[in-house]
Structure formats: C-alpha cells, structure tokens
Image (cartoon, rainbow, N blue to C red; front, side):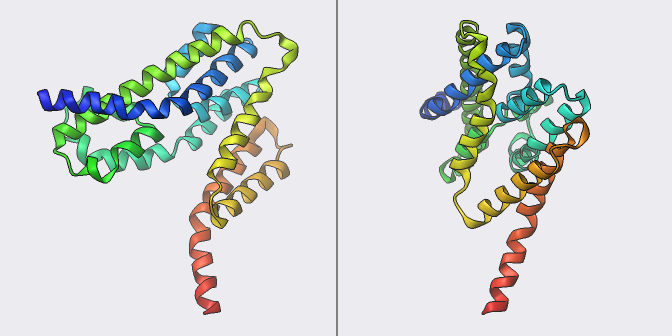
Length: 235
C-alpha cells in the first residue's frame, strides 16, 4: 500500500512539468465559453464532462455556427477516437480492477496520461504500482484542467465583447497543428484534411468539418502503405 501511495505522488510530480501546456489551453476554453454566451456553470460542467480540450473547442466552434446537436456530438466522437486506442493499450492493466475504478480511470485517459504511463520504466513496474502511478497522473491532470478552465472563465468575464475572443478557437487549433507537423506524412495528412475543410465548407449543418476529419484520418491510415509501396517501386 505504501509503495502504491508513493507511485501515486510520483505520478502527480511527473505531471507537473506538463501543466504549462494544459494551463493556457484551459484558459482559452474557459474564456471562450463565456464569450459565446455560456454560463460559467455550463462551461465548467462541459469541461468536466468532456475532459478533452480539442473536442470542446471544436464543439464551441459548431455551437457558434448554430450546428445541430447531432453534428456537434459526431464531431466530438470523431476527434476523440484516439482514446479507443489508448483504452485498448491500458485494457490489460485496468482489466482486473473493480468496475468503478476501471471506468473512472478509463474515462480520465488523456494524451498526457498515455504518454507518461506508457514509458518503458512504467511498463516495467508491478500492476499495483502502475495503477497507483496512473491514478496520480490522471487526478493531477483533471484538477489542473478544471482549475485552468475556471481561471479562464474569471478572466474571460472581464474581456470586452469587441475583442472577439472566439477568434482564439482557430488560432488554438492552428498552434496545435503547427507543433504536430513533424514529418512529410503528417504534412500530407494536414493538407488533405485542410483542403477538404475548404472544399466542403458550404455543406449544410457544418458536415464539411466531419468530412475533413474523416478524410484526414483516412489519409493517415492509407498514406504510409502508399508511400512505402512507392518507395519500393523506385528501388
């Protein structure tokens, strides 16, 4: 038990360096939510329920465009499909736990959680130690996320409407895009998805966004094989 508690606090400690990346994102989510006319309670509740900043910002954008609920829901699901992969990776670890713990830890999975808990040094630990570490990381991240959103709400309430804070939504996605394009493959996927977003922007109910996401995901799945085949042909 003492060792599990030690691993829990180790997870909290290891998450702290990542706070600098979570905090500004939460500030944007909180401030933008109130600028769109949502109440603070709605923004906090949505943040606690989603626990996925990129999906929440996408939902904000669609809410701003008066998109139907089904489109907003479908967009959030598509953006968060990567969590199915994370869940599959953690299934052997969480499987033996009681349902209440298994569902809670699975619900709180995130990019940061997956990155930290899938490190080789963590994989080498015993199952109780890994669960303790996972719990520490997820709880620390969840609290950090909600606190940053609340701070964003407080700051956003004092920002004049003519500042057009909702413009931070595309800027936030642009910043994420630039930092993740680290190879030719990712660049090609971004071009495919971006081109589809422009070409299909006039589709009703903002379904062009869904088309762009599906096109990007499809490109990410198919292009590696095509590029490999092309390289083998040239050889």
